[in-house]
Structures are given as C-alpha cells and as structure tokens.
Image (cartoon, rainbow, N blue to C red; front, side, top):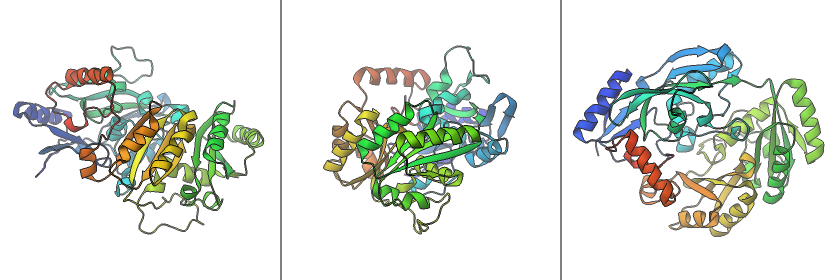
Length: 420
C-alpha cells in the first residue's frame, strides 16, 4: 500500500487534515518521529498524519517546575535543556527506538505521553500520566480543544490529559503538551547483590522497597542478561545481579546506601557513572536490542547490550510476588530470556518465536497480570493479540471512550484498545 504523509506545521493545519479525513472517511495513522511504530498492531492506512513538524519549546518555567512544548519536539532537545537546570522528567521516559533497530534519541514529547511508557523510577515517581498537566490537540471530529492547564492542582473539569497518556493517539492528535518536571538527584548509587535466584532476588527487592530508605529503582538481571551489560561490575559478576538504586543529596545517599548494604547483604556499590549506565540499559531494554558491534563488557558507559533481534519481546506486568512463578512458567514453556524491573512487577522477556508463544505467556500469567507484545515482525503483530484482551465491561467502556473522542474511528484505528 502506498502511504501519503501529511505533515502540518501548525495545530490549525492538523485540524484541517483531520476534518478532510473525516469527510473522506479515510483513517489516519497519527505519528511523531515513528520511533515506536513497531509497537502494537500494524495500521493499514493510506495516510499518515506526521506531527513532527509541530516542534519547539513554548515555555519552560524552571522555577515553577513546568514545561510546555509542541508535541513533535524531540526528547533529544528537551532532556539536555532540563539537565542544564538540573531538572528531569521524573518518570524516566524510555527510548525504545534501538529496540526496533532505529537510532537512539529520536522520540518526541508527544510520543512519550501518548505511549504512556515509564522507566525504573515508575515505582517511586509514577508514570507519564501522573506528570501530564495539560494538552492541546485535535479529536476525531476535527475539533481543536484544550484540556488541563499549567498548574499541578488543576480543577478545570475532567482530567482529560491523564486519559491521553497511553492512548497511542487513538483519542486525539496531540499538538501541544504541558508536563511537570522535577529536580534531578544530586547523586545516585546502586547496591549490587550477586547470585540471587529469582525468588530470593524479588524478596530482597521487596524488602528494599518497604524500607525507609526511599529506593528509586529495583531490578533483577538473571545471569545471561547481566553478562550483556556494558557496565564492568555488572557483567563481571559472573552470575545473576540484583540492583537497588538510591538517589538524592550526597550525604543522604551515602547514609542510606550504608544502611541498605548492611540490611540486604549487598556485594558491591556502583558509583554514579556505573549506576546511570546500568539503569539506562534497564530502562531502554538494551539487553534485547540488536547491536552489530557491542563494546567490550569490560567497559563502563552508556552503551547498549546486544540482543538477538529475531526474538519476540514481551512486556509483562504482574504482582511482584507472582513474578518469579510467572517467569519460571514462561521458561518452562518457551525458550526465553527475561529480566525484572519495578521490584519484580515488570518482566521483560525475549522469546524464541513459536506459534503458541502468546498463549503460553498469557497462560503462565493466568489472572495475575497482563502481557503486551512489544517487538515482533509485522505479520506476527497482525495475527496476534498484541495488547492483552480486555474483560467485556472494560472493552465496552473503551469503545464508549473512543467513540466520544473519535466517533468515526479516524485516528489510529488499529490501536483502538492500546491503552484506552
């Protein structure tokens, strides 16, 4: 199918494009840079609404901890600007471009919010939804509208911005967003526990998260995954590695790390640079990214691990206490490598393809959580339930929400139940 790209350079032009599509009964694939296009069911449309032309920071009020920018503004522009003022997007937005074989740093602010993805700090800082204050965009009727505002305590009607986070563009073509930013930590250290089995590792992570020491990251890398890290101490551990991150002011970090090291029996403490490098790997699923020339494991830095891109990658959300059982069931049924984030509540699995892989993974879950197929060839994503099937009442509610914003199904129709 030949795809025609429509690239507006203003919100008014974006609204014109949606009105035209509505009049023609032609669905639109709403996209930014396309860095996450491989995630979700393939969309068969003749037209793509490319919002990358809506770019630029509208207002950055560092003292008020608020940033407003056009939806197509690259994260590669936003993140360094925040870093200069020692601020950050606290939910730690993922860069999944390299997981799909694309260059890193190509995501946009609109894509970050629309996908609703968050990194390891999700357990302490919340998700993209919790940091989205206001939006402007075009609904499926071609109407330009605003929701939310530029203050945290916003009580102007329905909290529509929260609904946009995780909707994957199915409800609104976002044109502008306002997000909350927070101070970046002065220091970061990571405790490393070596050689723990899954159950023991999750128990240690649970103890760390329930402690009074304000842990901001809790992950477990089985031996095969840890060996792929580009952080010397992690790759050289010679087995499974359990990671606990502590952030904040220098003296506070030092005191909390000392207390946690004694309580957990940690084997090592990663310094600031090693900590940032390994949590970048955990955040961006770098262990499963294709990498033609992976650097030596002896080096430490922001490098990404080299994975097998023929494997299908699944994101599996579970109760942390159920994580080890679910992981063992998946390993028993499939040839899979996996690791844990969010204290055991998130499992990333790279699976050798089989016709019944989706059934095996969801069967292992039972009612304990849900699974999303993140990376697979297009033909597989066309025939597989990419997003976890919803219960009938939730499905009915999702249809009603979709119809209220987009009654004719113009916006990203193939992703209708992504996150709505």
